[in-house]
Length: 417
Image (tube, rainbow, N blue to C red; front, side, top):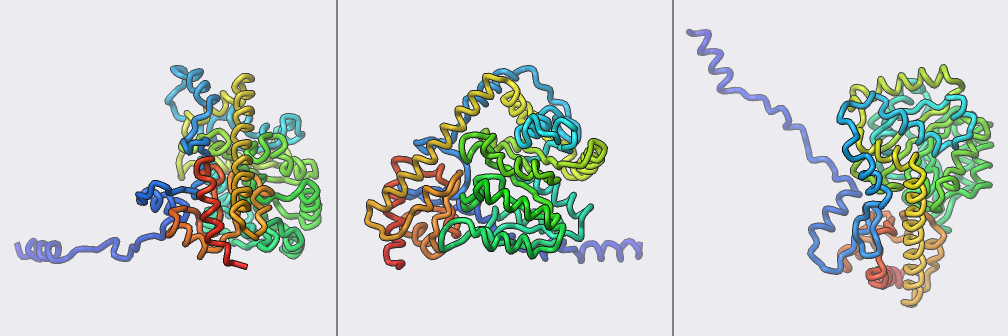
């Protein structure tokens, strides 16, 4: 009885506060913008933060090719688990889309690939792969880059370094310093590039500049890793937008790509992606794929089936593929129209600044050159939401809102000379 009372007093008078040390995490800067936008009741508010495509009335879009693919697969898809590496047919079609159906790497089965959870998941798998098999090599990230890249390689415990990319004065590519950084990096370093439509700047190297970068990479024995989130969304032509990848492949580099179908097919919530790594031969490719699968297994076990089946259906059905390519051109065209309208409208309000960069940049985003303080004014005075870096989603602009946005930008910049 005495022993029981001692135990009872201990349990009744003691408790462990397991999570007292847990503090609120900082909000994600992109998703925090949407939260603030939704809480704003101003009728003229504009959300230019999150990069999802909208039509000319500001409405979310489901592509017609996706609707038809849904109808085609209806009632025939399985709910069984996919393999750890995902749908091998989707993986193969993604590899052909990125590297070219007739590339030697594809024909010789030298590309190791597994389905992943969109671009984020693909990058995360590669970061873990890099940590396990090349722990001595840093990953160089461009300044700036998609903010989540830093989170991904940080959480994989890979050493991060940066290289120059964007030139703030010219609002273009800082090619000279980029090449200096590539040259000065330790041999056999990893570099992350955006294959096209660089996020957040919308600034890409020219074809000749990509060739110079590729040549220097051969000299330095660096490894190029491409984030492929916008293939087809930059120019409207997936083949043209894969040119950087093809240049490095033709020059004999071993490369890797993180593919995403979120933007280019509007499948944001379905998380369809693929990680692929070019290897020296089929045997090495099989070994690399087995390691990627082993990494994926304890994280999410296997990827979802529905989105993979949609993408595979669109890529392999000739009519649906043609429709997808046509719809890509429509999306790119609308964004380019908004670029021209925004620039023209700002200039028409009498701005003395040079706004050529709005129409020179490509892809979903525009790096406006606005300062954090000017962005704060746009939020507080005009209810226009964007990242404090001044990045705006061109898809968030409509013909009805472009003049209001242009006037607001002019108001917060007109005294900045």
